[in-house]
Image (cartoon, rainbow, N blue to C red; front, side, top):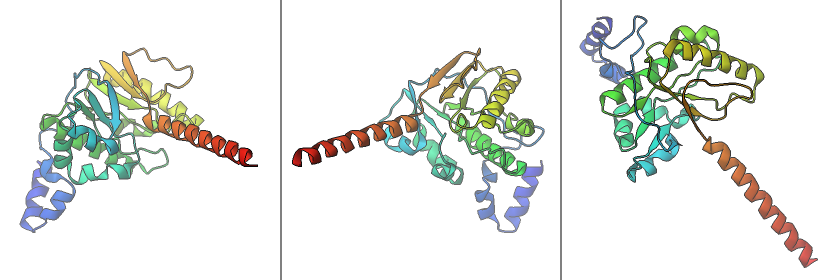
Length: 243
């Protein structure tokens, strides 16, 4: 009821641009948790053959890659446009087998209201895409225990859930918090299947059924480094031969 009231107030004052900026026109009044978080339905899709980044999805989607899923485990600026126009990009991604909800960053040194806002944006886009008919897999993310009251709010139980360890394993404290939050997520949501993008921390056991996907960005960097070293070696051999 509150959202509808704000919407009418803004319309009477000619603030349609503000409504669009916050995507209030896409927010059903009856699909929110008690804390105001958009609710995502459970997803039961079969695991895709691979997950590709949103930054590569446009070309792939036009080829109707029906066995691929799209992930957003990237820097936020690369998919901020999905918040600005979720309908347009939902249509673009609809030819893929599935799409994860955008993973707007939750850094543990980020103020909690900003973290909550990023969770809200992720939920709303996921909710919109599900109602457009996309097979949208909820992405679970968290920072510190202070984030738990909103980090899992609106996520479905007994659903396929996506999680990423990208950007975590190089920091001991971040790894510890990731492990703790992972267990909390399992207890709260009881996922039917976890799609894990990235590596599993050393010594960490995942008992829930899961499918692991390679971080292609890391693999590309390693490939480029190997190619650069090979090229450098060839150049050195040529210089030595000329001498």
